[in-house]
Length: 254
Image 1 (cartoon, rainbow, N blue to C red):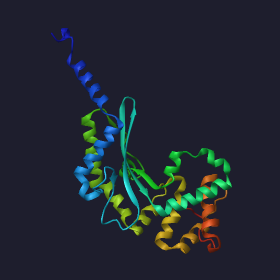
Image 2: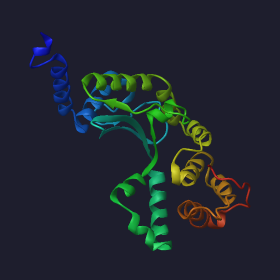
Image 3: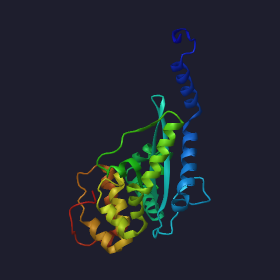
Image 4: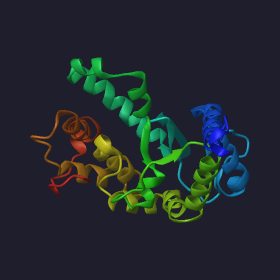
């Protein structure tokens, strides 16, 4: 009888699942996701000589460096998996580095809050999850929990569908400067605390230095949180300076 079975099926199944989960770790998940996406979508999306998910497309007319990061964080015994698109831009990174040095002189206490991780993030123009893009930045999909190989296969299939659908189309809008400007202007949530700095750099790229300075001159940063205000103050005083045009607006890019 089943009741006398020293190894009931449910127990065997549970033991097998635990053993399989123990074989999965964050590194293994990220490697399999990258490998499968290269195999399925490589010709359309990725740099062929890289194990990373570096986007390479003849349609990209900008100098954004675009890469996908796979998160696989273990929580509650399973792995919370997500794919994130990261935009790096040398012009913005240089501007942010100069701002960072200026701000450290303005407020020396800010240096104590800087970490290696925060300095690395400061080089990123934009970082956004596939889930956020899919939900149009209003609502998002819940966490994708991976407990076994079947879950991982389903997660990879979702990533493929995303790149073949709405998420892929959104990313491709960053392949030209003008469409990137349209995306940036249409979503105030992008770029977080460095939003105005990022917007200024993109505006200057698309419409020129004078237009960017005219825009930033109209921002009243009084009573803003110190870091947000500092970005605008830096652009007004250090980047534009005497080039500032009379105020034309009282709103930021938020």
